[in-house]
Image (cartoon, rainbow, N blue to C red; front, side, top):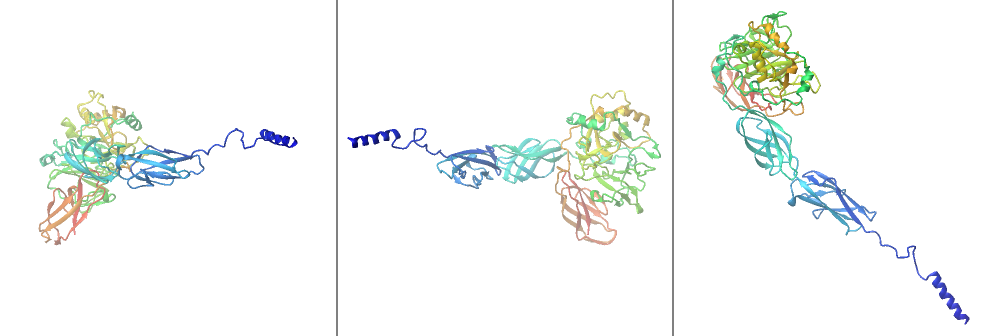
Length: 599
């Protein structure tokens, strides 16, 4: 009996204490948490050749390491793109099949734990480095565009409209199109979808395809100081000096630009009759004919941006400010009615032996659209011709001015717009005028109260405008001196203020960051027949060249058109080659002169 009770007690204790394990929850230990992978991309779209950061987040494990795959390829490859250990995905340079990249991350802690995200691949952003040609005539044209990131299906945009484009390579496209009008037009490249995007824009110049005026129009100019042009207008009718801008858009900054000039600043005719403080009033000119000889030009400052001599400058050519030119700009302007050239000198003075000294000089072909190379000066600060912007008595007397008028402002900034090519900045203010800025007298301005002479001038300001050409007194307009002017009548133009004008749209405005560049003219061959000649014997020079509309034969002959000229050396000469003195920066879309001198 006692032993039995002892066993009973042991059993009871086991029941009370529990003969097994337990926890506070009354159940078994939970399983470890599952390992999971999450993915996020900085962008769901990535351009070819670009990168995108993909971030993997691992939960359920302290081990954050993952293995990366692109389209099931460990680490990817050049076809589908590659991905680094940190998740930086680099898209391929060409579009893979399907146009997507499936990025997969597999956990190092649990290979069954993975996640995938899909990136859409976009075409790259194209970039233009150069365009050829940068200048061509109206009508049909062909373009070659060089750059980077071009894709099959890319289109060349001419003035914003797509033209017929052929894909050559990722760095080259060609296209054909038609230009109906002359002017400056933008060219860009647009890559197609997915991710259609447009490149930087580069400007080209379209010149007139119309035949130049016949030489007889030039020959009609009356020789002599202040000679009448008898209706001849320098440069073709589509030249920017001769362009009707009466309906051109107003620049969006017009009001601010006028405000910077000063709305109450008045027009001042910087020309007239007689003398002021012993000097003539205005910029004089002289017309010469075939009897005028050519003389050397010695440069004192800007010879590297000048056209060399010889030039047909008379020994008694009037200097601006004659008979007491003083220390002003001392311009000398000469028109050749035999060959239809315009010669302009700045800071000029007569030299010895019939030669002339000048700080700079420029030759202008009056039969063609002409402009200096970008960033080059001329006899004017803006790189413009001076004569075409002068108000002349002969044209006002005929009842109409068919060109824009030259004017000056006190301040200008480091920028220019066509047809200008050069700046002479004296202000850093954003609303200071760029050289070449064109003002237009508002169409609502009532001219009926002015004299017939002044109505001609004011109506020209409405139709052709005024072109900013130099730093000087604000709103001074340029003209030629003539004793037939009535100074009192001209002074009545002083009632016209800057607020009566508006700025014609300026696009593009060139600064140091976007001045176009291009190839210089090139002379590829040169021959002389005969190759050796005694003094005074004729020699015919022939050459072939590209990128030039005229040539300067120096030190004799001067400016010529065509590819041949006859010379007569002053001493026995053997012609063994051509010293091709061609200056750089001919990238403005206009053809220019090449300089030929012989060895």
